[in-house]
Image 1 (spheres, rainbow, N blue to C red):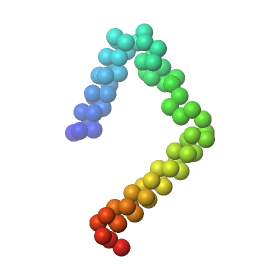
Image 2: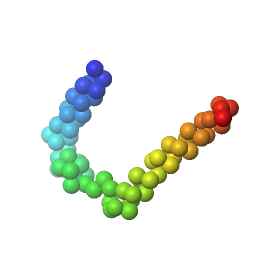
Image 3: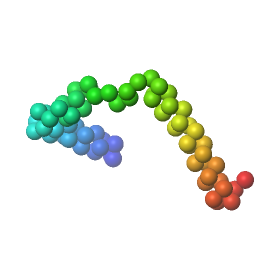
Image 4: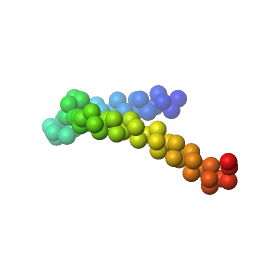
Length: 69
């Protein structure tokens, strides 16, 4: 039920932004998909490599804090 509610809230929010704030450049870029979320391939590769690395480091630190081997 929560994913359905989140989807409905997202749709209502985007329609609200489109109706009242579409003249704002940042909102227009976000809604139309013209905003670049990832600026280039190098940043994408850094992100793709860093996520597994930090998950692994988190697992190690949790094991040490809990006293596991």
